[in-house]
Image (cartoon, rainbow, N blue to C red; front, side, top):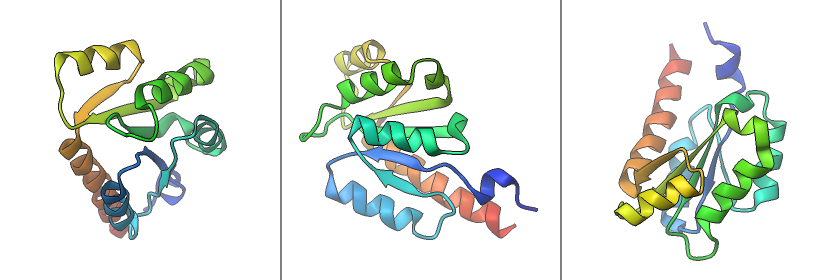
Length: 137
């Protein structure tokens, strides 16, 4: 039996300027009941979070190595503008290398979790394939 959360799952928000990562995410979620939305605009991310039925389970994945936007600032702005509602939003930062300086910045900019880039790709694959299996049952 499908639960209501599987029938209308909240989107995963992916903020990146990497065309390869975007393409990979599109392929992964093409057959999944989950959707992926690409945005690195604060107001667009807040709109998506605000219109979601299940805002307490929204993941915002931010490419911290992006060249066309500042990922750390994006994370902080989203957290600050959400205020109390930010408890329902998990911000996951992804970087190619995780040095002490990157770890320190994630704490300063209120990023909830930090993953290496390959681990983010694996997480996205697991989410996409896991929900496909749940719906099939």
